[in-house]
Amino acid sequence: MAALSLSWALFVLWGCLNETGASGGLILRLFPFLQGMAHADKLVHASLHGVLATLLWWAAALRARSLGRVWTLAQAACVVGLCAVYGGLIEGLQSALTVTRGAEWLDALANTVGAGLAVLFWQRLVSGWLAPSKI
Image 1 (tube, rainbow, N blue to C red):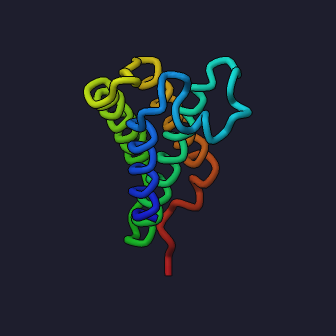
Image 2 (cartoon, rainbow, N blue to C red):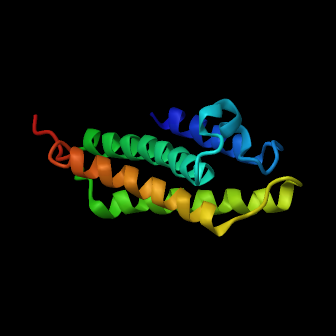
């Protein structure tokens, strides 16, 4: 799960730094049905970071459970924080390293909201299961 998280993070980085222009980036080109949808770019940002947060959440929660530790809300918040920092870093890199892409604070906010919603979903859905198993 950790390798999958890293792979997704690198895919997101590559996609966000790809010089595909200001028309919505690589993802909107891969999913043309999103073209013309209001705020599609923000939805893409939230979705990409929601998937990243999901992968990180599961990797960390499963590790904690395998070690017999309790998965806490503070640890879940750290996953959101990590995704927010990563999203902010990507926005800065877009501004510094690309010609057709720029940093937008609303993109960074969408990244954080997407990660937060994903973590909240998983935290609420499987909170009872996260208790360490008693063998």
